[in-house]
Each structure stands twice: as C-alpha cells, then as structure tokens.
Image (cartoon, rainbow, N blue to C red; front, side, top):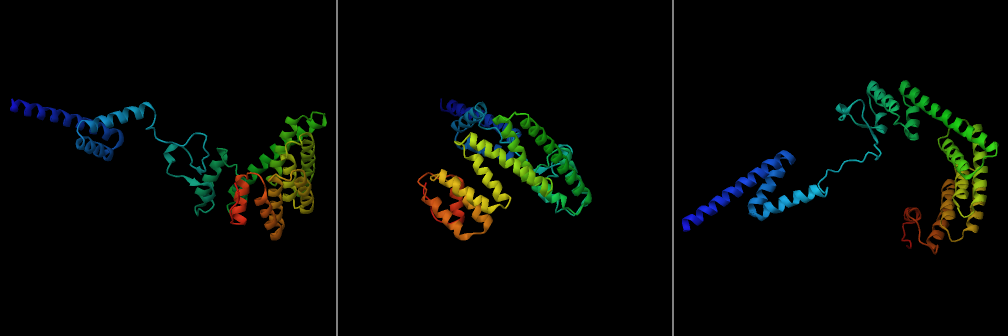
Length: 301
C-alpha cells in the first residue's frame, strides 16, 4: 500500500516537473531565458499553486491587454530624424544636433532628407540652418522658409480680399488673425511689410474684441503684440485699461509681468508678483510658476 502511494506521488511529481519544463521552454521562446528561469523557479518553489498563478496571470494579462508592450503612439511627436528605410534605425540624430556634426556630407544628407519628408517645421531649427556654414543646408533652409512665407502671404491676401468684399464673419476674421500672427511670429518679410501686417492684425483684434467683450483673449493678444513690437508705452496704457476692466483676473497681471520683463523693470516686476499673490481667485499653473520663479515664496491655491 505504502509502496503504491509513494509511486503515485513520484508519478505526480514527475508529471508536474514535466509540465513546468514545457511551460518554461515556451516562456523562453516568448520572453527570453531570464523570464523562463525566474518563472520556472517560482513554479518549483510553490508546487502546483505557483504554476497555476503564473498560468492565470498570463491568461488574464493577455485577455485584458495588460501585458502589451508600450510603444510610442503614432500621433506622438518624433523629435529625431532617421533617413531611408527602417534598416537605418540605428542612425537617429536629433535635428538640433545635426549642426554639430563634422561630416558635412552626412550633415547635408540628414537635413535635406528632413526637408523632403516635410518634417522641418520648427522655426528655431530653420533659423539655425540658415546661418549654417554649409551653403547647401543654408540654401535649402532659405528656400523652405521662402516657400512657406509665399504660401502664407497668398493665404493672407485671399482672406483680405474676402474681408474687403464684406465677408467679415467671426470664422473668417479668426482665420485671418491666426495666419497674420504666424507671419509676425516667424518674422517673415521686411520691417515695412511686418509693420503693415501688424496694423491690420491689431485692427482685426480690435474688431473681434468689440464683438466679444466676454472673451478677453483678443484684447490680451493685442497687448502681447505691442510688447513683441517694442511698443511698451502703448502696452502699458492698454494693460492699465485691461486691468481696470478685469480687476480680479490674473490675465492683466500676467501681461504686466511680461511688460516688466520686456522693460527690465525689476520694481514693477516685484509689484506685479505681489499683486498676483493677493488675488482672491485660484491661480493658474502659469501664474503659480511665475510666482515660484520670480519670488520663490508660497502662493495661495
């Protein structure tokens, strides 16, 4: 009787060991030897229950999608550049680092390939490329910027013609404002053209602000443009009017903060930070970051 009982136990152990061996072999093919050894040891350390736990873990993990590998989403921005097919995946270089390369031929290939793929859209990268010592890279960068400027100018002109014909609905004006803002931020054209665009831009912002007094964004953007253009006195007056209209809002104070930075006025900057901290409203992340950066003190939530 006892001999038969021991024989049954031995057979059960042998079957369990064989099952664990098959499981670890499959695990080695799926996830590698390290994972197989670890799970095999766990199964042997906790007989039957250990293997059951691992099998259930794999089953539910696969069923519920918990064990999927995390990959970058297709929509995520890729700040690196690789050329040709996936076989070149090892040759990935951040765009900004291209200009540090000594190999002029390889540097030129990286940048020109980026242009062909239409991935060079950042103005800072293009500005750096324009002043690169490699004349071919500088030529391509200037060509790209010129083509974009011409396209943007044509779109702005078409919108202006629509406005002249009396089509001045909010959708059209907002589209016009967005395109002129891009033109000005990219510093396209000469100073005369930018001044003309800025005048029309400010006028359209004024019209939209009058139509929608409940939305202060148009008024705020006109003040930002004054600051960008160096019209600091006009910006200060506009900020004062804006703050009087919205005494408990943080946006006028944030604009005053930008104005103080542009004017290098440290006293005004400290006054503005103190005023921000005294506001009886919950501050935005932008305001909190400004207070922490310029003041270093705690601000109320």
